[in-house]
Length: 305
Image 1 (spheres, rainbow, N blue to C red):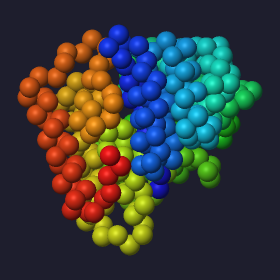
Image 2 (cartoon, rainbow, N blue to C red):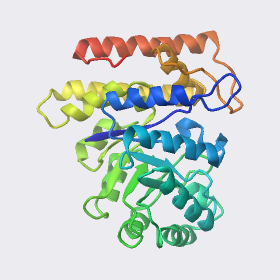
Image 3 (cartoon, rainbow, N blue to C red):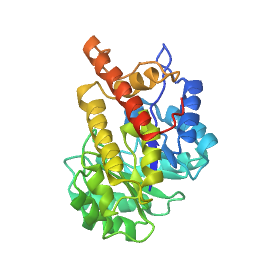
Image 4 (spheres, rainbow, N blue to C red):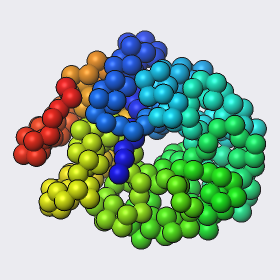
């Protein structure tokens, strides 16, 4: 079991990249046991980044995690040509894997059959291993097992960051992909049940960005004889926290607010049109931090900050 982190993008007071804070974040995730980072992700406001900035973040991630541990989304991949160009540029920036976003490449007006053709075309001659990212915006295209099977076996895709919620759906996808294909669960609503099936390789979620120590504990103790009640407790807490960060608080600002509460040098600023947290919302964020500390104390989890 592994976990990867969708890295938030620190910004300075002028809403420009804060590369020093970004490097500090990467070091924090490295110490916390992350296998890899998704350097360009929705948690990192990928659609508000210029492509030049996305490449900057990828280069810095590669300096900390190496190419194998550095993945990046093709956040400007709205056409086959744009994806192919982006793959070449990410490879030169030090990424070890580029993730195609099906909902960007083929929006809601595109049929599944045409979306499959586009995804297969992107993979032809790729000089970088490719993954798939079922991002929830701007269009949420969920892959069906039959499509994923062709993408993995014919197109050579190697990883899926899935936002499927049910254990049965993840299990159905795992059943059709070749050995070595990785499935990372991003929708943690039923995380314990998903992990129990053995279908998921690991987790890549919002909680990994805010409280990576919990993901480290989960991955280290999964299948090691640790009491199932402790693992289920962590999974349920992760699911609740992810929902809070996404729906009860303004996302992705919520992730930055919690990280600042933890003592990381990241400002609670976003380029997206998001209001600052209200007093009530800040109380919710602070309560999450208190709950995290209590959970770590109960389970004797070492904090990295």
